[in-house]
Structures are given as C-alpha cells and as structure tokens.
Image (cartoon, rainbow, N blue to C red; front, side, top):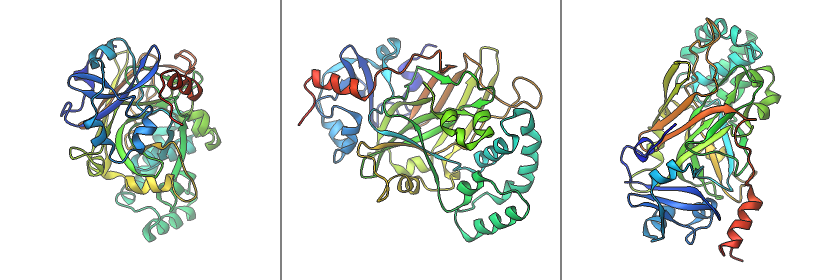
Amino acid sequence: MTLSASNILPEDGFAGTLVGRVARSDGPHLVAVREIGLVDLSRLAPTMSDLLELDGPAAAVRAYDGERLMSLDEALERQVLLSPCDLAAIKAAGVTFADSLIERVIEERARGDARAAESLRVELLELLGGRLVGLRPGSDAAMKLKSALTERGMWSQYLEVGIGPDAEIFTKAQPMSAVGCGAAIGLHPKSEWNNPEPEIVLACSSKAIAVGATLGNDVNLRDFEGRSALLLSKAKDNNASCAVGPFIRLFDETFGVDDVRSARVRLSVTGLDGFTVAGDNALDQISRDPLELVAACCGAEHQYPDGFMLFLGTMYVPTADRRGVGQGFTHEVGDVVHISSAKLGALVNVVTTSDCAPPWTFGARALMRSLAARGLLQS
C-alpha cells in the first residue's frame, strides 16, 4: 500500500490547523502539518494531551515556528506517521445511528451467526425502519416505542442505549495503543464475522471541551459481541484494532463543531479477492448531538485528566454478501480500508490479524522516558 500526501490531506489541503505525531529515533514528536512539511511542536507542547489543554490551541500552533522535520510524503514513505493521540483515553459512543442500531439488534438476535442476519434484517426493518428516523433518545415518543416493543418481546439492550435516556459510552482502546494512517489494523484471529466502523472522533480536553476532530476505525467483531454483550472488550480492544488519524484538525475559523455536525464520512473496502464495498455516514442523522455525547462521557461523575478521544458512532455497516449468499460482509486479510471526510482527509489501513500485527510495545512509561531524555518534562 503506497500513500502520498495528496491521498490523505483534506480537500482544502493545508488551510486548516492540522497536528499529528511522527516516530523518530528518540521517540514520538508532535508536529504541525504544513505546506512546507512537518514542523516540530515539541517545545510548544510535549504531548498531544498537553496541546489540547492550551488556551486556543489552534492559534498557538499557527503562531509557533519550530524545526522542519520532514515532508509529509517522506513520513508516509518511511511509515512513521503515528496516530495523532497519545495519553488521552480512547472512548467511543455506541448505537448513535438508526442503521447501526438495527445491525446491533441483529447481532444480538443472531447470536453471532452471520447466516441468520438477513432474515432478521428484513423483520427488523419492517418493524423499526421508519419509526427510528428523527426519534430523539429519551423522549416521550421513544419511551412509547420502547413500551410497544417490550409488549411484543422485541426489546433489546441495544435499543435501550439507542433510544433510551442514557448513551452508551465505552472504552475502545488503551491510551497510546491506537495505530495511525498507513498502519496494519488488526482483527482477532478467531473472528469470522466482523466489520470496519468509519467514524468521526472528537479530540477533547480534560475540561470536556471538544477542540478538534479526526477520523477513526472502531473495528468491530460482530460474532463476538453477538454471542454476548459481556464480550464487548474482546470484540473491541485487541492489538491494532483501533485506528485514528491521519491528523487532528483543530477547531479554528476554517473548521468547527458545526462542520462535524454536517460532515459526511465515506468508507470503502477493497480486497485482494477483488471484492469492493462502499458507503457513507451522514453525521446529520446522528441521534444525539456530538456535544451531548461529550457531556455523557465526561462530567462531574467521571473525569479524564489527560483528555479523551471520543468516537461518535457509525451509521454505515457493510452488509453485502462476501463469502456466500446470506452470509453478509466480513473482512479478509489484505483488505484496504479507506475512511475519508472532506475536511478531515483520509485514514487508510490494511487488514491483518491482531496476532500478526506489530505488537504494541511503546506505552506511557516509554513516552515519559523519551520526553525526559529530550528535556521536555517540566516540574
């Protein structure tokens, strides 16, 4: 897989305030992504978590004049472009779109068996399809639908978080564990039914303020989670199972939360077997406002002192048959997954299994040692 700057930059190029991380021999460096190349921000903020805590991080980045480290094309060629987040918690909101809500209920009722999905999909679309459009979670109308479905024996834990008063917020991956653009992304080797989840990810400070956004792939194992919701951690958190990038676009005069609310996220998967599938997420179809999800994640009852990255959920779940009629979509090793949005660029990864992906070895302790050796830690 060969990538260039033109493949992954936003449609408006370098117009926004783009920040990321690159691997160097002495450890990861925070960089501004500019037309002249990748500019070292280490003396402005040693970590991305520190940068997101600044007052006006976009203005601070634009005003900073650091050392040029390399071009973006060189970083991609050398495969040193890292996930743009470091110490932040990696959180995710689940079941925030009607289409993905139906797919989660299908997983639950199919008990992880992909062959049972199609007949369940027809039944649930007939029952729920139009009734979920525009339905505000926790509203009187949502509670009436809950009562009606309960009477028919159709209530589900996924419907509870999809249209009930409380959002599903879970831990997707550990800090420092996400992979970046161009890296291999991992599936549990025992999974036979899985899918990518193309999402926008908000970059938030410890004060629960969204200060930027990026793209993410919340890789999901439909068979594991379908067998039992208690297997969520096994379905979601495996080696290389979380991709974030290519950069964080900080909120400034060119890009803000309203751009997130109106964004479209496109997914395409291209396999070595010639199989292709593509679809779109329209963020204006989300059931809970992005800032409502931020408030549900972090507040008086739950804090994140190093900030957090929040996946907003996916609308599009590929269902096209791949291995046979009625078996739906699942990944194959070698798939190229391309997730893009006009103002955020493109996150591109190739699928492998979690036991074959490069092991995660550089964690918070290694980062602290690196920063200390470079004289970047302050008392």
